[in-house]
Amino acid sequence: MDIVSKVKPLESLTVFFPIYNEAESIPLLIDSANKIIPKLAKDYELLIIDDGSSDASKQIAEELTQGNARWRIISHPKNLGYGEVLKTGIKEASKDWLFFTDGDLQFNLAELGDFLPYTSDYQVVIGYRKNRAEGWRRSFNTRLFKLYIDLLFRLHVKDIDCAFKLIKTDLLKSLTLNSGSAFTSSEILYRLKKKKIKFKELPVNHYPRRYGQPTGANLQVIIKACYEALITYLSIKFKRNSTN
Image (cartoon, rainbow, N blue to C red; front, side, top):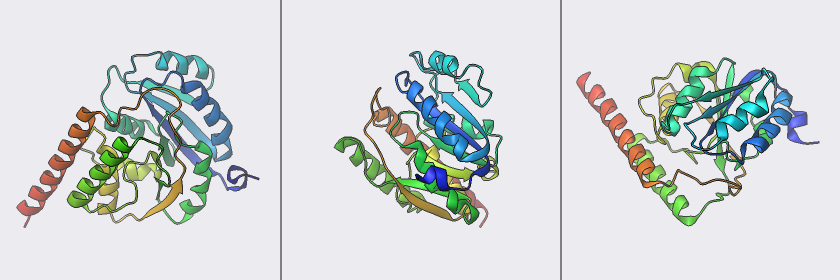
C-alpha cells in the first residue's frame, strides 16, 4: 500500500500549480491531481495559475476542468514572473493548508503524502531535491544563487527554490512580500524564519522535464531575482539601523 493510502488526510487544503507554456503537461497534471489530492484532504481546492502563457495552456486547462467545482483557472494577462504567481496563489487560497508545486511534472504529487504526518508538529514542511534532474549549467546557477541568498539572509535550508512546499495558509497570508521574481520563494522562507517558525525539510524525487522549456536558467530571470534579493536585504538593513 502506498503512502497516499496510509496517511490521515488534512481537514482542508489548497493546491496550486504555477504554469507557463505547459500545454502538453496539463492533461497529465490535472489527471494526477484528480486522483491523488482527494486522498490527502477532506476538503480541497485545486488552482492553476497561468502566468500569461502564449500557448494553449489556459484553454486546455479550462476545457479539462469544466464542470469540476474543485478547480479554478486563474490567468495573468501577461507574463509577470514566478514570484507574482506565488503571490496570486497565496491570495486566492481559501483552505487551512496551502501546497504548491510546478506544473511541469518534475515532481511526483503523491509524495505530498509523506509530508502530512509532520503537520501535527510543523506549520511549514518543505521539500529538497535528493537528485536534481537538470543540466549542469542550471545546477551550477542554482548553487551560486543559494550561496548568494545564504550570505544575505542566512537561510541555510537544503534547497531554497524547491517547488514542493506545504505551509499553513494563514502564515503565508500574514507575510508582506516585496519581490515578484524567482527570489520570492526564498523571501517567503526568510520572512517565516523571522517569525521564528520552524521548518521540516524532507527529501523528494526530481524527474527530467517531459515537455516544454524551462525558464529558470534565463539570464534575465536570474538577474531580477538577485536584484530583488539585494533590494530586500538593504531595505531590511536600513530599517534596522534607523530604529537603533
